Image 1 (cartoon, rainbow, N blue to C red):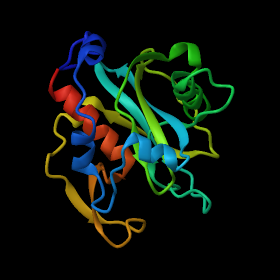
Image 2 (cartoon, helix red, strand yellow; image 1 turned 45 degrees about the vertical axis):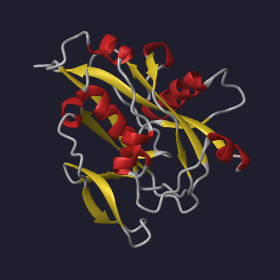
Image 3 (cartoon, rainbow, N blue to C red; image 1 turned 180 degrees about the horizontal axis):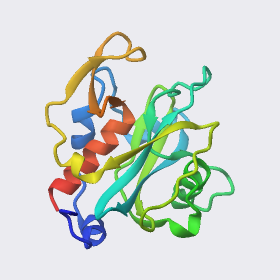
Image 4 (tube, helix red, strand yellow; image 1 turned 90 degrees about the horizontal axis):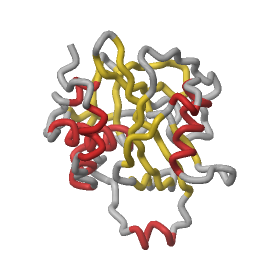
Length: 209
């Protein structure tokens, strides 16, 4: 049974964000911090990602995806939220989040309702400045993955974030520069980097509802 109740969406809308304090818990140890002004001097690419909530068997979930392997993509093969680069045709970042979710997950834009925005995050290796949104869609949605972007869907239970540790598991990964990095290990799927940092903030938000 859903431990949050059906008023979860309203609670999320009103909750406090911890921003960098939550991001830091799952941040790779070599990640540098920059002010917004410093980030702008790097001429970053702007993007948006989406935590898309839905009810399934009276439990709240959101989708993650295993990205397609691509030698030109620094984040290929990793686990991520749906999202991507803001296009000139996008009126705002909300539209970017909705459009990318439609393209990558097959969830039509008009079924995707934005609840709120979370703290932005800068990703130095790819020079992306990412805006994160929380949204919801109808119960038991049908997902149709964009094969050029994703090879596998992961349905992640919201309740799992309640057990997310303040002292994360550490692992050395092929793309972590030979350094141990904090990870979320979910059913043998290893989530790290910006995605785990975003989920860390969402976890804190949920714990404080």
